Amino acid sequence: MADTLKFLLPEDRIPKAWYNVAADLPEPLSPVLHPGTGQPIGPDDLAPLFPMALIEQEVSQERWIEIPKPVRDVYRLWRPSPLYRARRLEAALDTPARIYYKYEGVSPSGSHKPNTSVAQAFYNREAGIKRITTETGAGQWGSALAFAGSLFDIEVKVFMVRVSYEQKPYRKALMEAYGAECIPSPSMETEAGRQILARDPETTGSLGMAISEAVELAATNDDTNYALGSVLNHVLLHQTVIGLEAMEQLEMAGDYPDVLVGCTGGGSNFAGMVLPFLGKKFREGTEVRVLATEPAACPTLTRGRYAYDFGDTGHLTPLMRMHTLGSNFVPPGFHAGGLRYHGMAPIVSHLQELGLLESRAYHQNPCFEAGILLARTEGILAAPEATHAVKGAVDEAVRCREEGVSETILFNLCGHGNFDMAAYSEYFSGNLDDRDYDPEALEAGLAGLPEMG
Ligand SMILES: *Cc1c(COP(=O)(O)O)cnc(C)c1O
Image 1 (cartoon, rainbow, N blue to C red):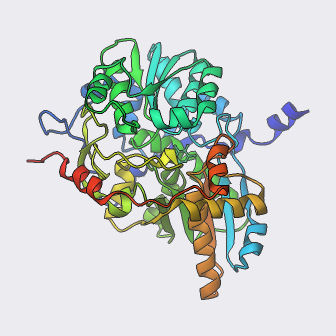
Image 2: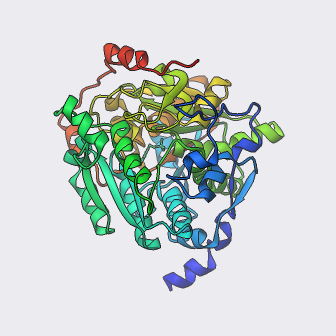
C-alpha cells in the first residue's frame, strides 16, 4: 500500500534538473586562484580531489543541469520534502504574516545534506573511485555521506571535529551504522593533523583543520577522492532542489514569498532555497527579500571580510573570494556545530557584496527559544543550526505584526534536532552562555589572511 502511494504520488514532482545561478548572475563570480601562482585554477588542478563531472558543474554556465536518473531514484526515498504552512506558529505570534517552512529533516540522515552527498557519491562511483574522505562538524555531513556511500558502494572515511566527536557520540554511531569510519580531528593519521597537534595538543579542532586532513589523504591516494558538504558551487547547485520544489509547492498554495530565511554555515541550505527565487528575480524581476542568519559566535557574513582566503587551516586548498574570519579562526564550541566554519560560499558572499541579501547574527539562547516555540506549535524539534532560521522567521513575523502588514515568509527548516538532545538539555538547565566571538581571535584570524599581489 505504502509503495503504491509512493508510486502514484511524488515521482513527477521531483525536479529533473538542478538550477545553476551562474547563468543568471548580474556580475560573474571572481575566479578561484591557485595558491602558488596566484592564477585562476583549471580543471587539472582539481582532478586529484574530484571527479570531472563535478569539476564541470563547478564552473558550468548552463542554467539547468540534468539530475541523473540513479540520483533521482534515491531522492524518491524522501523527496519532494514537505512544505508546511505554520498556522499554529502564526497564531502563537499573533501575526498577520503567512509563515511557511520547507522541511529537510525527512531525509534518512535528518538534514538537507543528502541532496548533495547522494549526487557526489554517484559521480565518484561513475569515475571508478573506491574511497571518499571528508570532514564533518556536527556530524550531519559525515552521516549524509556515509549513507550515500553505502548506496553506491564507496568506502567513506570521516574526520570529525574533536569537540563534536566528544559532544555527539550518536552521530558517530550513525556513520558506523552506514558502514563509514569516523575519527576525531586533528588526528595523528595525517601530516596536517600531526603538525596541528604538535603546536596545540589540546585543540578542540575546527572544520578548517579537518578539511586539511581529508584533503591530504585524497591528494596522496589515487583511488581516493574528497567530498565537501557545503561552500562549493556544485554543492549549492545540488541543494537547489529545495527551492525548486518550494516554488512549485507554494504555487499550488497560490502564494509567493516576500521574504526567504535560511541559516548559514557554509551557505548551502540557504542557497539551495533562495537561488531559484533569486534566479526568477534576475530573469523576470519578481521581487523577494532574502535573509541569512548566523551565530554571533561565528559571524562570517556580518563581521567577516570579503577577501581571498584558504578553505582550510593547513592551506592545501585553492584560494576563494568569500566572506571569511580567517582560516586560522577557531570559533568557540557553541552548539550549532554545523555553523562553525570560518568561510562562506563564494556564491553567497558575492550576492551579499552585490546587495542582494541581508544577514543577521543571533546568540544561541534566543535561537533555542525560537526552536522551542516551533516544537510546541508545529511539533518538530529543529536542529540547533536550523533554530537560527526559525529565529529569523519569527523576527520577521513579529515585524509584520508591528507594521500591520501581511507578508509571506518562507524559511528552510534544514534538519531535525533528534541527535542534539544534549544541547537542548543544556538549554533547559540554563547552562548555555551567549558568547560573542573573541575580538582578539577575530583580529588575529583576519591578520592571517593571505597577501594578494
Ligand atoms: C551542515 C548543516 C548546516 C550548515 O551548512 P550549510 O552549508 O550552511 O547549510 C546547517 N544546518 C544543518 C542542519 C546542517 O546539517
